[in-house]
Image (cartoon, rainbow, N blue to C red; front, side, top):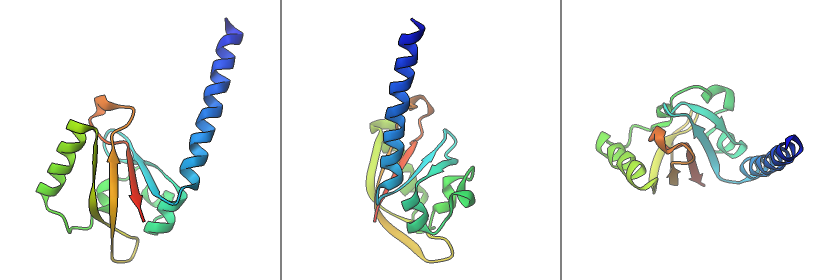
Length: 126
């Protein structure tokens, strides 16, 4: 029984390493948030595209990326879609570090923790 569990854990660890490799090597900027929309992980493309380093954004609200170009009703519609459908796609403008805003076609997806009613994965398409 213990050996069976160890094999399962080993296989799961291998899968997680594969997923991590994919996320770290994609050209799409990805950031992951917790239930309170605080950023808990970004990939290399996020750093390159936005100009923010991981250490600058970790544990900060994803609202720090808002450009100010969208109304409250825009975000309400986006969140309503995420909660009702599990995802939202569209163009959104976000801030870049020390520069102008960044328009991007974006997919926001609620993954894994639906009970949090928050998206945990954001993807930018450069």
